[in-house]
Length: 335
Image (cartoon, rainbow, N blue to C red):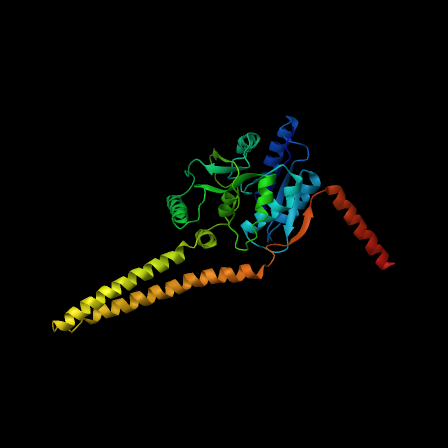
């Protein structure tokens, strides 16, 4: 039985690479439809995350040329994770499986074959994992390694060298829809779904065109989002360190009493100054971490919508009917 596949691709200012991405994916999808692997109902869905360039115009043109290509336009820029979630949840009812990937053609399209094979073998989640980081600079390679280690140490369990190239079955997407947090970190949420999972290794390529949307500062923000969204370990570390400071203060009390009774009561100013500055800095840092968690609780309790979809180019014929209806209504208003 043919599989209904939908490939979801978040896009932000991707006008340089979008036509090539669409061309390669269409070639891939058409071939798999001809061989009977995929159903003719399979689609490619580009999600425009409030781009400032011609990304949405290009998506509309691609949609008009080929009905296999669909488009979702968010009302404002919400960020990669929200755009990806919007695409996944919007198409989940019209597909057996959904594969998410980036628009920059760094993810190997040919890995889709193995992902679908894993799905046919009973997997609900298949992670695309980089086999190496040869295309990265030394700095990016080391910071990425540090990132994954830090995430795991602090309790946010993630798949090493996995970004957002993955396959999700329909029932996995239904479970994903039950997670309602506003502070979104899909790389941490999806492993919590459970079900049978597997990994497909692929060689990540250099970006085809355009600039990376994740510079160092944004990667650091993303890492912090993942840690604070999925782990309370930083707060526990503060508590543990507070206990250590308390025990150390008891030792200092014994030290001071011994010096007092031995007549050596003159203490150097350096130790006092260093202690004040060190403890003061740690207190401010601790307050900042606790404040970060309180801020996230504040956002969660508001229960604000995570995204708004302005338009969804799903069926070209339906779109033409809606445009025709709008023209008739405008004509009636004028007359």
